[in-house]
Length: 430
Ligand SMILES: Cc1cc2nc3c(=O)[nH]c(=O)nc-3n(C[C@H](O)[C@H](O)[C@H](O)COP(=O)(O)OP(=O)(O)OC[C@H]3O[C@@H](n4cnc5c(N)ncnc54)[C@H](O)[C@@H]3O)c2cc1C
Image (cartoon, rainbow, N blue to C red; front, side, top):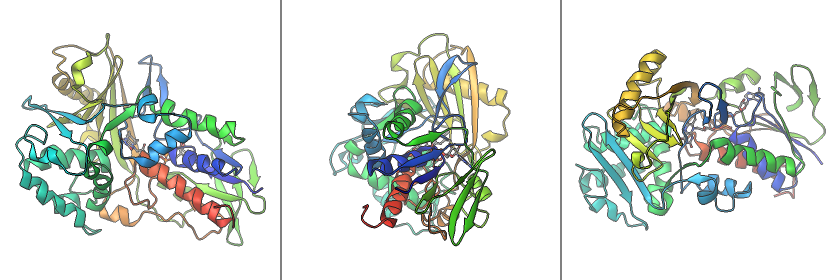
């Protein structure tokens, strides 16, 4: 039975491996780092003396591929067992400059009654703002979010901007409208049941990564850590050999390869390929308090959205408050030294979470310089197809053309799709 060699043990590679294992295909995952998970990982931070995620990750109950993946790797009821979130779609916000607080509530069902209710929709907006927002559904490939929504509206400041930063990891002036629309279509447009915000209950690794590795290994698959592919050899239009620092793996007749690695790494191995840039960054600051964070600090959600501040979303796990600044490359935060950004965002956090003059005990700054690919119209056009010019080589990864943004959902879809293409290439397997 031919084997599938998967390069990259992030979500995309693991999703591909899980899908292939389900079809009894032997797989080996080669992960260059000492742990699987890539940009979606949990680790013990010695300075904080706490387990933390590299960065806060939000998914939504409408992310069907992500929820299905969690179920297939072992969570009976993902929303309850490994994810945390409110029973209804609620999004608490605070304007850090004015102190104003509100909660957006999205009703269940297809008719958006919430838009007609002042108490449920974004404050100081009216029904017409939402009607006009429908223009995003018809945006061409070359349009940015800012080009199709009303830039001078309150809804822009309180909905479009935070949503674009969170989903596309770029500003509305740069982000492709179509990619954002795809998310809205699969979540908010379907009503509250598809819009519940969810986070990993005890850590990304415990929810998305460790159970997948366990599943793969329990079914005879192999996950090799510290196995970085340095180069590949091709012959006759196929990959023939994978080269590591201290060994080479020669492919057998019929073997396939899936590259599930981000653009910069992909270009190292396949210089002819022209993927989108992947230098959009995200800043995460983890503050450890001396005591548990008060239960009501976040309102009704698993996090609170912050407007008018560098910190954009605050998440809490036990006594650690984690702040996210998306698109930190585009809004100037990348230029600020750690000390400055830590104290500025802590002051914002004190206001957002109503902490008064509480101080933190320890802090960890994580700057993910290559958090996501470029999701501008230009970047979206450069997303790669999963098929390549080499017969036995397929691509997965959040930079591939999945139709949805570079997210957990997109990564899992990309892995599923690469696996399906492999299966289709063997007549009778799918
Ligand atoms: C800080 C941050 C916050 C985010 N927030 C969210 C969010 O809120 N919601 C959401 O849905 N998504 C979010 N994302 C995006 C999400 O994490 C990514 O889309 C997803 O993890 C990408 O998975 P991947 O497998 O495609 O790539 P990666 O996770 O990058 O995995 C690729 C793997 O390949 C390995 N590798 C690279 N080169 C080689 C080689 N030559 N040989 C072997 N292995 C190699 C790497 O070590 C890595 O483990 C966030 C990302 C970051 C960084």
